[in-house]
Image (cartoon, rainbow, N blue to C red; front, side, top):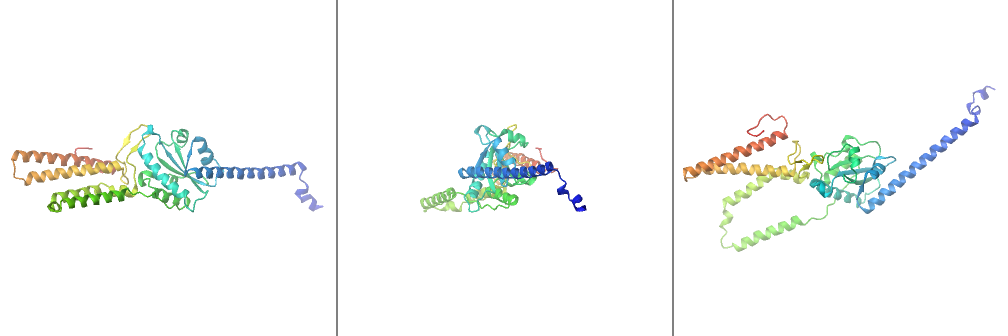
Length: 336
C-alpha cells in the first residue's frame, strides 16, 4: 500500500506522460534537423572550396555560413577592398599572399572540412563591415568552430605583415592546423642574376685590355654606400616580414607612408629613410670636399653651405620621423 502511494510513475496523469513523450520527440527531431543543417552547410562549403581555394562571400552568405550556428569548422576571412576604384594597393598585395596560403591548404594532403578560407569585399558586403565595426582593410579574422572570435583571432597585420608564412603560423596557433606554404616557382631572381653576370662578363671582355676601372675607389665606394643605405633603411626587414607599401584609410582616403609604431614600418617608409640617409651622406661629402680641396675660396664656401644645408635639413627630417615613431622621445631639431 505504501509502495503504491510513493511510486510517482503510477500517479502521473496520462496527459503529463504524453507531454514528456512529445518533448522527447521534439528534442530528437530538433537534433536531427540541426545535424542535417550542419551537413548541408559543410557540403556547400566543400563544393565552393573545390571550385576555388578562397570562397567569395556577400553579407547573406557570411551570416549563414560563418556567423550562424551550427558549425563545426573554422573559417579564415579576409576583409578587403579589391575594386579598382578603391585604389587599395596593399589589398591586392595581401590578396596575393592569401591566395598562396589558401592554395597551399587546398592542394595539400592534410586538406579537410575543418578549415575554409573566405573573402568579403567591401563592395559586396558593406553591411558585414558595419556589423563588425570594421573601418580598415585588409583585415584577417579567424571565426572558430565554437564560440565567438577573441582578440587574438584578429591577425596583427600592422606589426607582423601579411606574408603567407606569417599567416600560416597565426592559423596554426588559433586552429592547430599546420599549413606548409608552397609558392609557385619564380625565376625572376635567377634571370636577373644571369643577366647581371652576363652584363659584367661582357663588360670585362670588351675592356679586357684596360681593366684599370676595376681599381676605381670612387666606384667601389658608391657600391658600398648603396649596400649600406639598403641595409640601414630596413630593406631586409621588408624582405622577411613582407609589410604593405603604404596604408590607405578607407574612410577618408588618407594615405600613410610612415607607420605610427616603432615595431613596424611600411615599404615606402624604408624608401624615404634611404633617400634621407643618402642626402645626409651627400652633405657630408660636400663638407669634406670644401675642407680638403684647394680651389677657389668662393666656390669652396658655396659647397660648404650647400653641404651644411643638406646635413642640417635632412637630419632634422630624419629625427622628426624617429620622434613620431618613438612616442615620448623628447628631442627635435628644426622640424617637429
